[in-house]
Length: 97
Image 1 (cartoon, one colour):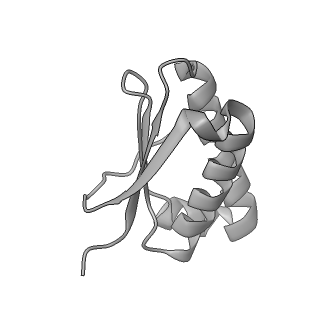
Image 2 (cartoon, one colour):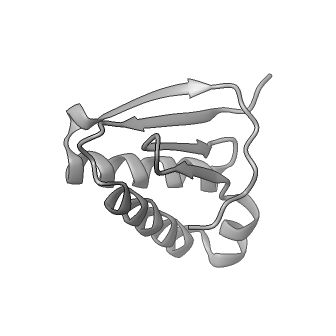
Image 3 (cartoon, one colour):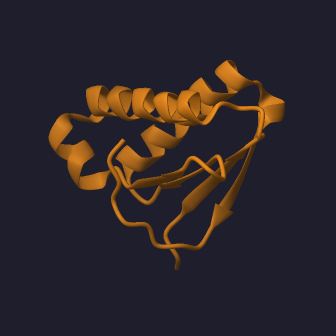
């Protein structure tokens, strides 16, 4: 079974720097909820500002927390119509935001 990864794509009208800041806020919030050690081990995500794309590994409880926080913050900030999400089969390398 392929681990669950979620691919978020945002409208070109969404400022890339604000999207990156929203992801960073979600990561900090996830760290607060699951602990810094668990977050450093289990939070795997990738961000492409040119494509306005975010991929998050949701194969761990910490990753699922990050998905929930990120989509909640992003839809409230940019609107539901500015984001699409789909489940994908991919492997991500850890990223820092």
